[in-house]
Amino acid sequence: MAVVGAVVVAVSDNRPAARFYAAPRGRAEHGVMATSTRSGTPLTRARAAAPVVRAAGPRIEEAGTLPADVVSALADAELFWLTAPAGLGGAEGSATDVLAVVEEITAADVSAGWSLMVNIAATGGVLARCADDALPLLFADGPPVLAGSVARADGGQVVRVDGGYAVGGRFRFASGSAHATWMSSRMILDDAPVSVLLPVDRLEFVGGWDVLGLRGTGSRDYRVPDQVVPDPLVFRADAVPRRGPGVHRLGAYLAATVGHGGIALGIGRRAFEELAAAVAADATRPGRTPMLDDPHFRHELAAQEARLRAARAYCFDAVHDASAAVDDGRPVSDLLGHRIRQAITHATGVAAESAAFAFRWAGSAALRTPHPLAGLLRDAHTAAQHVAVAPASLTEVGAAVLADYARP
Image (tube, rainbow, N blue to C red; front, side, top):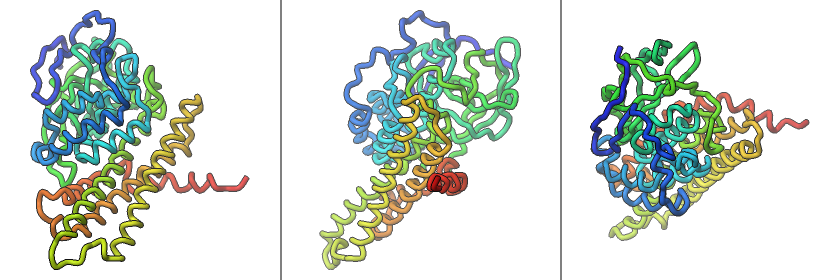
């Protein structure tokens, strides 16, 4: 096994170069985010970045990951560090900020929104929970962008050894990894889940992302070669946050799940945007009755759009209620957690319905590659396969929400 030392690495053009495992430089702050010149709310910054993301849509799909200009736009808006602690220069955004920002970027491009969702959750979650001694390593050459995986395909056992922890294994679904500088891999130590932090040059990426939708997320497999990592870079995945905003006190699972609501809402919004464009084009076609003259279409349109808006309201309400409990110093009850899962799983289904509705009514134009609705339909149904929002996730929710209606 190789013991990791101070390493200077050259990285690809779509992520910042960094010196990994280097000695601390004695900075007053751990990262350059502390000198941020950000202005406006996270949502206004996301809206400013969205046109760059939208214009890059075809290139994102073709490249299978985010091009350098998109990564730069998201970094310049400081969206990767949305839930990073303020003491480290992060925005310390709320859970509702995550919903709104991911919705905005997803409406511009679903793969970009998905990648950003993962980067926000991984970066903020790690910086909130890691030991103080890990921060100089993570910030050795500027603010880190993290991705990661909880999906072990093989191995993933951690063993205490002299000098740190011996690790190794193979992992799947590393969304957002092509522009990440560090990876957080979920492994097992003494029958408990731990996060193992490694700079990307210590991993071997092995592809494996030839899929129906979300093609631009770069959710490839990777292997962690057998090696030893320093003590500070291994910590309990379910550890109580040491620092940072309230979103992390929802718990690691719920904090990561919130972003899926933004994915669903962004897909639904983009579906209606593309449908509006299709209706406008249809109105100018000779020899056809405009869609808006069809009462059946108008009725279905109003009903589907109402379902989407209702799903959006429930997502924000459920996330707000759980966040309010955290802010008040109250524990997040099982019911509040179930409400978040219920709202976001429901919104995911409504988003897929909205994409199918828009695709069906857009007619033959949507069949032709690269019409946005064809890609949106694929992305919507691929996103719905994630375990956090699959229909089976509601099986644990039903009894809990019904009990909430029981009369005392």
